[in-house]
Length: 311
Length: 152
Image 1 (cartoon, rainbow over the protein chains, first blue to last red):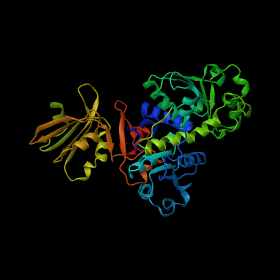
Image 2 (image 1 turned 120 degrees about the vertical axis):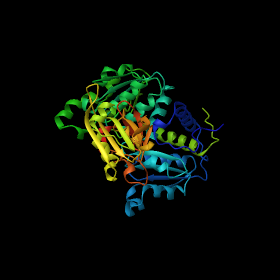
Image 3 (image 1 turned 135 degrees about the horizontal axis):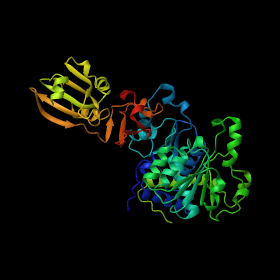
Image 4 (image 1 turned 90 degrees about the vertical axis):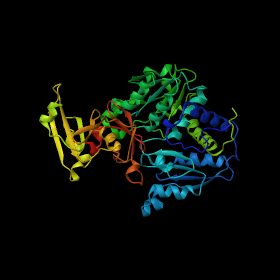
């Protein structure tokens, strides 16, 4: 059976259907359980970071190597012809993609991955384009929710922290709108979820509510997705005043559901106290590790037509 | 009809863009660079409609508005009509229609959008017809008309 993602691009979560998402998650689970160290043998993958990133790059490059593929590329745009000689991204993509079987890229400008996909025939995977999309992060988040809850339907999922500027929470909320979850938003007023996301949720009849603190909802949650409230966005007194509503410590977890998992895209600063790490609810480090499996799943599906997920 | 004749002189051949919302007529002239050709143009601003509201009207001699221009007109005047005139008679009359997408017409208002620096045409999808919201094909941001300098 052909897989519908074979030789496709992964640019934006909005391009993926519910069944595409399910196929990716099943494939990630299969690869986590049954490693395929030779699946990408003789395949070369370009890993092009026009903007530096540590976790995304290492996780992606690990994914390629765990599948037996090899990597060409660069880890920051500064030394490329693009930066030094003024080459267009379109030309860079044409040249680099003629060497490789897939093109993974991060770029500081919005729309860069979409544009790249129009100048090459090999699959392009967006590793983050400015403030726009970061679909592989969303896929690893979805995979972690699916892995820990066994489903993506009918879950209570709370998002905490900076919901205004965090593209991670925007994309994840958009992806979850394809499933039947109830969403809870907990953020300082100045960092609330933007209206366009709320409108999308309304259009899809997804239930959501807004709350002033984590404690209001924590006992009914299946997933608590924490993000950092950046100090720089507030003056010092204001920050001290608001921050306590958006911090999590182990004492707050006394009456939560057994299946609750706390997630965070990392890095965390102080929004999750260290004592949470030792509770059975902490899952953010496994979540980061799942980035490798989610990215392996994409590579397997984009580059091999015959790979069958064995779950 | 008699009102129009009283207010704006008839043309022999060309196009009449009618039912333009008041205050948008001059913007349309500027956007389509209609005045740069040397054809005679008659512009009516703030003309009274029967319903007490006001409208603008543009008559361009010896110029026929293309389908593409008619689509673009919808950015300014979604309810406008175009009359093609031959020998003082209306030979064709149609309403402008908002297309599904605009290609190569508008620059993206997002200064960090990749479309500014690369050899591509901009592309916007119409994702809200009543409020006129346009979504950039590249940066995926949606904008209403007030964000576009060209439409100002």
